[in-house]
Length: 385
Ligand SMILES: Cc1ncc(COP(=O)(O)O)c(C=O)c1O
Image (cartoon, rainbow, N blue to C red):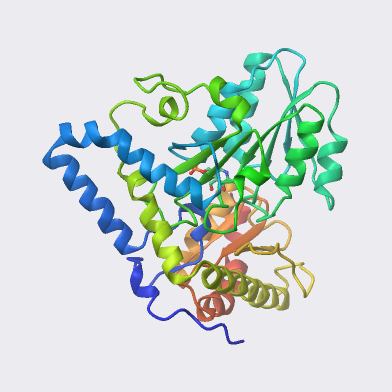
């Protein structure tokens, strides 16, 4: 199948030659020109630290406005990463004993840990919702008179599942439930209109699909929460967004450089990047599912599915493969070592494939050609783990 790469894009990245990176979704990859902008900012900081930090708030505001406009947010603050953004939201919403916090079986494990700790401290009860085929029905069906908060993914990590977060946020607000959206993957990946989604809190990483240096994220806060938002670290910054954004002396260069990542995306063409990536991810899923099914190592239906606009796809491995973290890590290390492919196996027995502009169809074909043998020979090894 012909999926025409965008000319010259492989050279825009400093990815290790000889390694095929098929896991953009975990940590992203920063274009060289964005790395250079960040290096310049660091050099500037080292030349005149006082000047750099005295000008920082104004410069952060400019960078934040650019990113907020890209995601159409009328009220946002930079935060370090999605983990921090979710933690700020959990900290800001008052909870008391007997309240219920909804989360889903597709949620990110670290986020679940955070909400469980918040629940334990406040006496609230975490309630796990199994999304099934109809996420709206599943989430709304789990709401009770005690539900105070719902934490939902925009695009889930393990399943690469897209949720109708705008619709859910509206329905939940009508039931007096506060919505926190973990949008870690969404910026750059999808067209995002935060004012239209209208969640109470929404956080997205810029360092995954928006080509920003790590770590950088934007937390959107609905107007009625802005005065009540509680930063995790108290520093000189006053009010929203300054109190969240300025957290003492830190390296702020990733945040300042975030707009350059957006510049790269826009110069290449958002639609062009997105349609290339989603078409390639679908292709990758198909060739991998076919190769593994032929080898009896995958149980997926011939027409495996994905979610519109999401350049990450999942292939389910045959039962018993990659079902624990130790197994998944061992398999990934074996595949890197033997095939030179950096893959992600989610420890629920799923291979998650990402596609980014530096990938081509050959990358997935190479993985498909070698993976069955690696999995077969690893089975004995995995039995011992
Ligand atoms: C859905 C989801 N939420 C949260 C995170 C955490 O992101 P970070 O480590 O940048 O805070 C990730 C990271 O992969 C994720 O996929």
